[in-house]
Each structure stands twice: as structure tokens, then as C-alpha cells.
Image 1 (cartoon, rainbow, N blue to C red):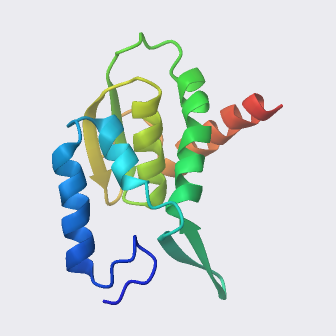
Image 2 (cartoon, rainbow, N blue to C red):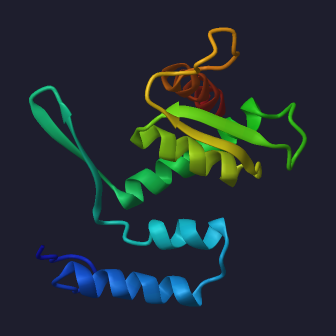
Length: 146
């Protein structure tokens, strides 16, 4: 694969070796991993179909979405003591990644991670699906922006 815009690398092997070298020198924590993951702000992270159009989100745009979500997640989890454990049970999606980083950014360690194909197996379990959680986070983001 030819790469034109990633630090001047022209093949994936060189780029991956560059990133692995940066990781080897970095502290082994989520903050370092976050910076390493999102330091290529102009590169495309996600492409998706929106009807007849292909939309693109760059790493920089997605990092900003995560950073804007952190205060909303903090308010949503305000009754949970700082450092209290949070579990995620969400379908595999780009929004899962946003919620994952926002929960960590809000200061809550993740105890339980599960990427679901359907939803909770136990019909009596309490929880929200990704759409419900995203709507709730969006409502808290709206409070912040008001």
C-alpha cells in the first residue's frame, strides 16, 4: 500500500516500524497510547457510507469528538466515586471507541469490556445499547454547550 501523508513514509512496513519505535520509548499507559493513536491528526481514521455519499473522519476530528465527550461522561457517571469501575458492553463500532476513550479520559478505569454482536444474553440484565448510551451522552453534551 502506498502512503503519501504519514510522516513521508511510502509503505506500511516503514510506518508501522516507526510507530512501534515510538511506542517502545513511551510510557506504557493509556494516556501515551491515546497520544500515539491520535497523533496523525490529518489522516483518515474512518470512512463510512451515508446513503449515496462516503463520509470521512480524520484522527484529529475523532480525537476532538472524544475530548468533547469526556465532560458529558463525567456528568453521566458523577454518582460513581472517582476510580470506581465502569463496564462497557457495546456493539463493535466507531462509537464504541469514542465511549471507551471518554470513560478513561473521565478518570474511570474499565473493569469489563465486551464487544457484543447482539446485546446482553440475559433478558433481565440492566443496561443500555450503544444507541441509547450515545443519545444519553449527547443529551449531556447539549447541557455542556447550553
